[in-house]
Length: 470
Image (cartoon, rainbow, N blue to C red; front, side, top):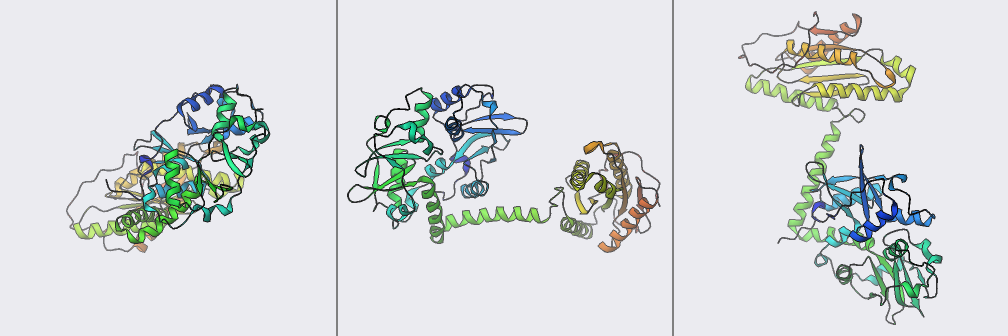
């Protein structure tokens, strides 16, 4: 089987998902986690998936919280979800940028099919792709291990356990003789065990260690083989030198991948594919209005060039433009504030987006103005569409019970004219609509050029009656 340097998140995610009723007590949640050997549970509400992790469980215990409270007493974090096909490097970047420890994995239908953590990422790494030059001794200098002798009481050191990678190393004359991990503490607390026992009675022994001359390759193999989350490094005399968490090994691993890509064309192609996906996303952002989510002027010009080229090449049916201006929008901003004004713009954009077809282009032209290019649409059909949209906006109740109206200008592209001439005609129609009392549609018919192009029927927009035109 061909090795994939950048596997998809769906191929490595944990498929065991614990769906919990938010009303069950925390003790049952802990029992489920322990029984299924997972580090989190999920619930679902109207806004999506929520997650409750073992870290939050431990934090609750540290605060002296009761295990009898129900799960819904917590402010559960939203579970960010990514497609199962997303490449692992993209997922890591997303998790790092957003400070996430867990990410949900969804299929093409949007169903939750897995959860991925940093542990899953480590498990997915093939140590064979890493260089054998760097040793754990070179990496460990930046970490100060948490260590105690065996006579310390667990209850006195429990504040050191806040994360899944946390652990206490039990030493005897500087040599590691045992380890107590977050998972151990979790099991002890919810099994009702005595946390006043000394560490020597609770620790796991013997300790799996790595000599400071061990390579990263060998250390990764050790972690995978023993299913542990940290490398405990000792010197020639078996004295404890330090502890390297798996997250740092992950960071080094991906850094090494970048070097190996210089010599592996297949992996390089995967990276190129990922960059192309990112480029397409950036291209989409470049033609999108940030506030409303509609297109911007760049998108409209691009769409118009395509339409004019289509008409010139094939003598196809033309297109129409509809320009919109929200009536008295300045009064809304002055009365209710710009935050409400932005919500109004978003809501109007949403109504526009619902009205247009996939083949059309709807953009925010600027301020409170919007423009729509209606592909394969003659003037009369565009006029019907504009009137229907005018009525929909007039009847819509916006935030804070605000009602508003729009004025619209409509025109059809005349073969041979340039963009400036077309926009100028429709802008004048919009001006007439404003001058004529607002909340109306005005249509420009004066520059429509009769041609010998064959008639091609189009699917008109559904709508109500049209207004008289100038």
